[in-house]
Amino acid sequence: MQTHELVAHPDHPPLAVTRVEARILNSDSEWLRLRWRIEGIGQLVMPAFAGRGRADELWRTTCFELFLRPEGSTGYCEINLSPSERWAAYDFTRYRTGISERPFPREPDCTMRTGSAMAIFDATVPRAGLPRSDCAAGLCAVIEEEGRTLSYWALAHPAGPPDFHDGACFAGRLAAPAGA
Image 1: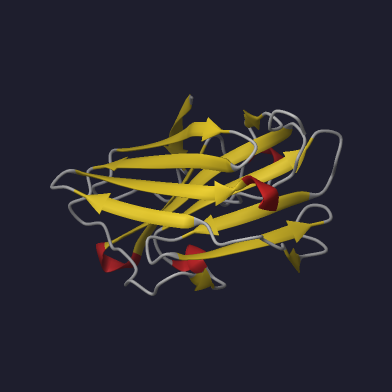
Image 2 (image 1 turned 90 degrees about the horizontal axis):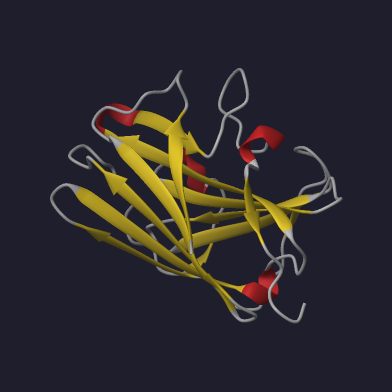
């Protein structure tokens, strides 16, 4: 298990959220299990339930993201996971270039649980839809709070505006599944 404390982008501070933590709970040949924990959710805005299915622009509201760049590659993939249960997966040939829809053998499973002070977002992603090699990883979150306040959380941020595609955000590691 890997636990990462995410950092809010300094130009987009949250209203009430005090902490966002991302965890890689388990990774095997079949599944990648991820968890985000959000503390201080008093003003959190959640997208309405929409049921499973692909959807674009999930990042416009509360959304959780995983970026993976295989070692030695300029290409990377982006996985967006929403509390609405919608999801998206894209491939890029290099920084924000050559975008295409990434094929997935089956849909990720997403679950959001909320309490009075914190929320837990769990995602189970089929490993067959992810790169099969060691990867640099970016675990990120877009958090919407009341008044359309958006904060951007990542392992690290580049200088300038929030940009999860920037190499500075790929500060984590995801090992290849056993037997890959």
